[in-house]
Length: 145
Image 1 (cartoon, rainbow, N blue to C red):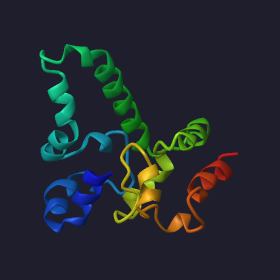
Image 2: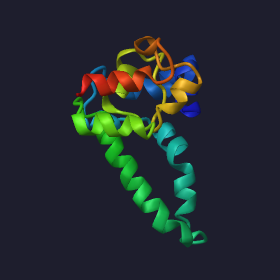
Image 3: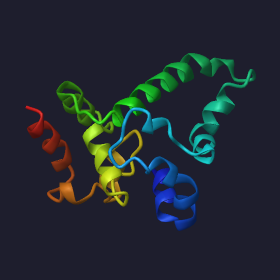
Image 4: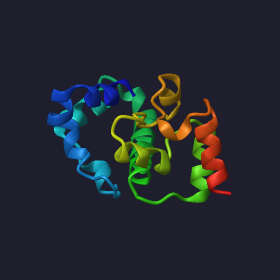
């Protein structure tokens, strides 16, 4: 969350790094992988370090997490919202496709890359959810019943 918001709030970082990804106002699964090399390193640096031979005990944890992050990334940018996923993920405070699409529509809100929870904590959940902490989640639940 902090990394992503920092890149949006800094004019220099946004134009150098984030503008590449935000060319896609209506995201596709490919947009999720259209990121600047600086953002790639910044996002995955700790994972790269964990994959060093001196840390072999992390492999059973890191490999499934990287796979899960890749799947979530494709879903967040696929341009579709699947009912079962849109109902379950918010209960876990995990970002959803509809929530992340708001970020591509309005680049000044919805910064959570994995967890939408932090958008509520820091007040960046956007105009859609003015009625309180859980209103964004109830909006998803009501929309997809």
